[in-house]
Length: 309
Image (cartoon, rainbow, N blue to C red):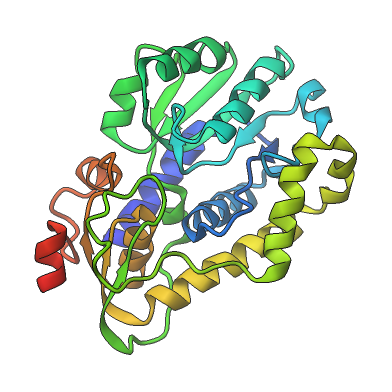
């Protein structure tokens, strides 16, 4: 079995376990921002739900989550990807508030995440406000994250990222030898800063406007009904962002990157990838958990070495 099929099979098994007994759900924290990797996750999750006959009643971003979710007894799933543990305070607060306000008999599912605790206080807050919820399932993407939560979350599982559920990614033939895709956010080490590089493509104006409106809806609830559209309409936004990432990565035979999803998307295209760890070892922790020696197209290097190759 190929790498792509092996990882898809592992992801399907893990997502089946995570969704055991679930036939319907509400989906929140949809990634309504330019991070194309998060859109790949959204599409992988949506494919799993469609393939397994799971009905998605509502889809919402963190800012536009409808109030009625807190009184619903239908399971609620929080978008995977990113970081659980306080690295992004706005999303953490949305997640914790949902766990506290959700109906006591409603299952809350956290789709696969990495775990990073910027401080001991952040860890205590997650335990107090999130992990203590009785009806909670949490999936994490790597062994290091699992060890951080295994004593605090009763229903904890290890799962590959949802991008693997997409299977092989078809892309045009490359037109250049090498492309550097470098983080420009707080998770960068700055090691690729001296190289000509790209990050995830900027959104067109209509997607930026929708993101802007979504965050204002969090402060002005009267806007929230304007954000409620079909699940398919939300997913079309993810498809556009994902297509932009595919077009970017497809340009090159070799991708040098410190972004986890540039690494994973590139490998699912059959491209060679030279990975540079970000500042919380997200890439190497993931590869150590899932790949072993089965991924010949992937190598890890120091930035200076990668940029010379």
